[in-house]
Image: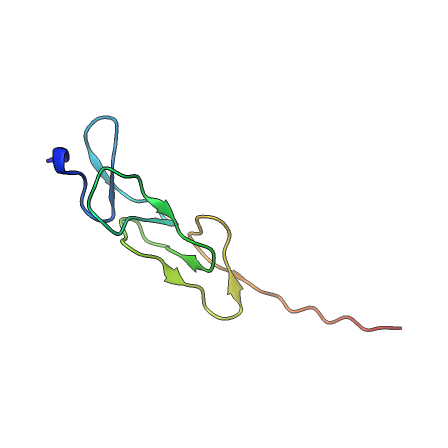
Length: 79
């Protein structure tokens, strides 16, 4: 029942439904709040989650990341 809010990992719609948080978002508690974007340094590739995953070393994420991007190392030579 929506009067108590949606379960963890779900958010309420204007039609009284509870839907899973999208990829890149999470909701750690029951309630009427919307899902939060994963913080910098984390990501979430799966819908309906209650937390985000830490980025692996050598990767980074952008706002509300579904996936990670590899960091490419560039070497410069001084002349």
